[in-house]
Image (tube, rainbow, N blue to C red):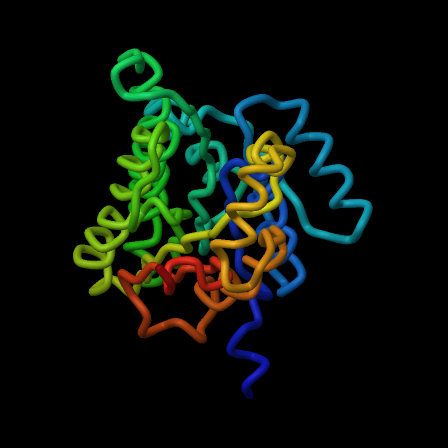
Length: 255
């Protein structure tokens, strides 16, 4: 009985930004739990490459390359999934970018790009998913937040504003959609070994700061988000709603 709580067999999971990094690790973890996967990225080739690799490894995979920041593209993508008979039971809003620059030097275009990719996309994709989940009476939405959903660092203010918004967007989704059998929660990763953080990992000063600041004494691995993602995607979390779970090696717990 306990194992069935985490069984995703028969469910379909759309993971945005899943051609690499955290998104790919989460998608693969959901697949390992039995879910059929819908991989996403902005362009077709990287998505197709990863999809083929995962099919060869035995996963059930479909592709949905679209721009998560475009209302029309998101709507069209869900209509295509509808046409293919794919009902998204689990949505992971993972797509995200970073931009490091002091506020006084930051252009409006860069501000808007980071907000759109990290926050507005979660609203757009989440809205389309919920429009289909509501009539079915069930659904799981997992938004990817950050340590900056809670605290700030200099030079990453657009990202901080976006991820803070993700935290409260998640609570708003829960407030409106819980009565329809939908659970909306978030994961806040700590400092993870991803392509996006490669320059920081290779910076001895920053690498040392992360390791000394984190009680675990190390960077996190993308696959260490999988357990939390499977929990939030499964029946085990049916009464968990509007929460953000930090997977950060204890960083937010210490001064």
